[in-house]
Image (tube, rainbow, N blue to C red):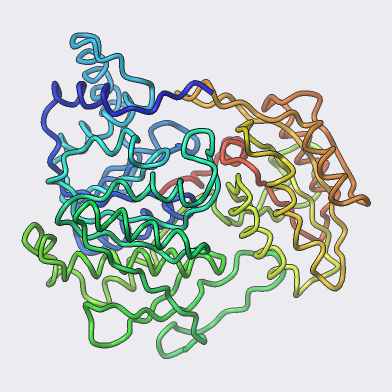
Length: 474
């Protein structure tokens, strides 16, 4: 894989571009940082602030990773900013990588838009990630979401080593919010790195589920089968308010309670930490009602997202198909998806499940590690549903030529090892040319049940291109 982690090139490039000084919330983590960034952006936008957001990888288009005013950056704005960055890169001989060019393009676009706040998601790791080249003075809050094993070839082979890389985005005198962690050792490392940097450690408080209350949440409507569920009623303890905040969380899965807690702890920190208060005066803008409304308005496509595939979209379908898509791509996120599937299947234990899977080739991560976690639910449910697996590839990724899919044959071989009775379909190669055929097969296998598309966000993007209904609008 051709990735050379260094801040030298991008710092040289940024030194020749207009100085970036937008107030910035900087978020690292293995899993959950995208959800947290989406929640924060929605809350701040609901409060009336102009907000920019940078996420990577992008979903359908490279432009949807750069949002301004809650919309992907326009083709004109993107082209103008990128052309300027590429011109300067050539003139100053920075030799920036494709991701460094993309990051610099986003920063320049945000600066030109004179945004009130930018929510900046780390690409890979933290310490040597291109986003960490921003000036320390513009950072409002740094944060890290759940840390687990991923990208070990670049970040280290233990969660402690990875945590050290990710929390190294800490800045002196700034608050650092640490989300709930599965591994206790991550907290130990995070506290040490944050203290060494002279940053202020703040532990996030998870949101808690609550019962639906008609007087708070409105009349409850039925949500049955594999249709999109109702938002989850939650209660939040935020130090900036004397009373708990009630909200409805439209992002699904128990793990989103942790992500929401991290996001609202960041919001609370903006309202209370001296370094934030001196930079932004948000107290009159961020009421409990505004926060609740911002949470309810959050959208984050491709992460436990429900869709209805109309039968008219593909020849050979005779009925609409319920589809759940999720970008789970490592053992930890696959385990989260597995837990969620176990939860939704519990009400219909005999309903068939058909998976369409693609995986990125990213040693030392193996297909066995990811798929063992994904299919864990099949060994814990009392009643075993019919499970089918289709393996395919995905489209080449714009700006990321090193990303390659695992052979579909390798995926089905591992699936058969884990689930000996599984029904299998294997694409003849790892291109995106076979998604339609995989969907036809999976839809037939999962009649009356659910098709799950997972293993890679790039496969999810191919599905959205097929769906073509504006689903990925933020």
